[in-house]
Amino acid sequence: MNTQVKRPIIGVALMLGAMAVLPGIDVIAKILGREGLPVLQIVWARLAIGALMTLPFAWRIAGPRGLWPARPWYHLARAAFLVSATFCFFLSLEWLPIADPVAIFFVQPLIVTVLSALILREAVGPRRWAAVALGFVGTLIIIRPGFADVNTGSWLAFAAGAFLACYFVMTRAISGRAHAMVTTFQTSLLGGLILSAGIWAVWVWPSPIQWGLFTALAFIATFGHLMIVRAYDHAEASLLAPLAYTEIITSVALGWVFFGDFPDGYTFVGVAILISCATYISMRERSAGRSAAPKAP
Image (cartoon, rainbow, N blue to C red; front, top):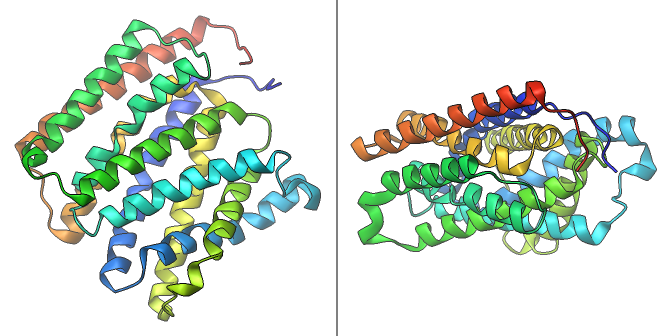
């Protein structure tokens, strides 16, 4: 049983921090893809190098016996969802500017909230449902100009969002049962093992600069997702789901800086709605957390 004291405001802060840094992954992945490296290899590097980065920390926390998960099939399925989400999203970047797949990808917070209510039996009040729905409307406003030309990249981005929603819900179900660093290591390890079975068929030997980009990608992804795992230790999935919308802000900015993809007026309207939604949820949960007693799920 998870006996960790819940501090929702800490969960909110960790989730917002993760959403601010994780779009750096998309920039690096798009650059590497343009340089001819296979998407499967980029995903493999993100997980395999991430496992190496977190191994010393996980070893110190759990020892050698704690490095392999107690429920390997559950964690293997969870890692498979993360691999699938990452692969579909990176592949979508070959068809679309960064801001477009990120906007479509954000169907996942809505799916997380639905799954949290149906599977995890978390209480989702009408105000949270309204906030998630409003955030989804904001996402639709962002991608509305492209609805007439939905291509392969759009479907891949949608699939990535669905896969990541499943990963988030499974993360919530095991939160507090192991240290976040150990869980992060196990996910990277299992994901790397899944991909290692076929990576050599598409392997292209990277240059030293590309190895550096691989390392930077793995660092951002690993420690960004570590922040997400820690966030789920402190707050419910239905609370954190709407906050993931804030990733669009950094994504739009980086897409403009690195690739010249400047958003149009619809995007600014949608982003404003998303920010308002996330801010409202955070303030309301902080107020409620002051009077609510800590509880275990």
